[in-house]
Image (tube, rainbow, N blue to C red; front, side):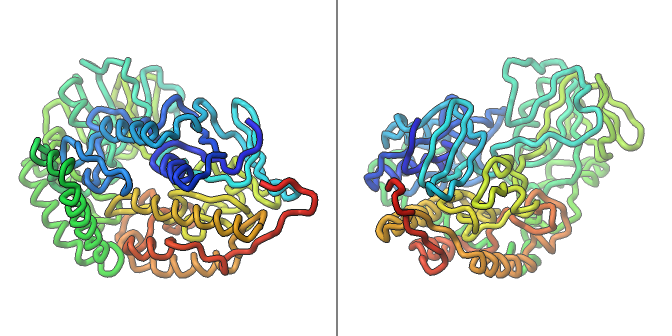
Length: 492
């Protein structure tokens, strides 16, 4: 595949957005490495029944490619996937994508100022390496003794086995997070018995989804400013939630009352209510929305188990109280490797140290985009760019603009490498973590996937998103060191 100006890893929102913007900037010397056979990232992989986004449709698209024909106010998985495939074709980036190419290693070579990249299909090099793999790309299975001994069918929600028929089976769902509350109502009517293993009760608010009719779609298509106004209104409304997340978590008490009313309307059994009542501040874990999750749990063929799973046997699940429940299928809605992303184990920087070793269980990056000692490497949806209240696409577009400006600056100055200064990175993350200490994610009284092995929230951005957009609008050269090409080295 030769030497390239840039290599992008991943073809979800981040990777496709970066590829499209490179083409629009007149840069064609790049490839996108995609380990699967199609674009789409998270929205290609998560095909479980009931899968949809919890961000409103009009906000969940690129600002330069707004979709006018959403069928409902919250987008379904298939529609998002179709949208991403349409973007890849419409903006002519498909020829740049190398499908079935998985990144297995990337090492920085100081002498050539290039990234040496190894895939399962061959090797290549690049001046710039852009990781757009995202935080929800590597499913995490539960760490339970005996899980490998199970002789029934076991799979993660992000690797749904559509060929497997669960009708009439005894099914266990492990986890009650965002994926589980969507798939449980779809699974419950089909199975003989459904056992839901809940570690922590989630806060669940009513779902305000509605179908978008022909008039809605006509307005979006023929009067684009109406969709733009809706998009702006949704964005501003979502930004207002930040105060409760980051300044005064007590504000979340209003939403907690709404969530309790929602549960009390749908669950009449006091014992089940007790199991489903959270004991931490709303927002500490991801806020969930559903109108059919609670009703599914009240059905006669469903049991909610709050005891910890102690062991999985060939035909059963055993909880800490010694109760053994026979099951035919186990569905794991147990999240992803977010703060321990496997890609970090494959990328070596200037000193031959992998990102995983460098981070030591607590990812950090300047503006979630660059790491000292890893020249010409950029992250999209990197550390502390996740959101608990609005569309991640907004953050992705902000980072893409920053990366493009960094590349232009490097070219304009005739420099071979650009590397964030260690003191800038340290000061930035120190300030960020100080801000984090008063947020609901730290003070809310829960354990969540936002928190890494060092007890830091290295997943989320602790504030409004428009200041992040402002900070990334222009590349800041003073935060970086530049190195000119080595004499005699080939120029890109």
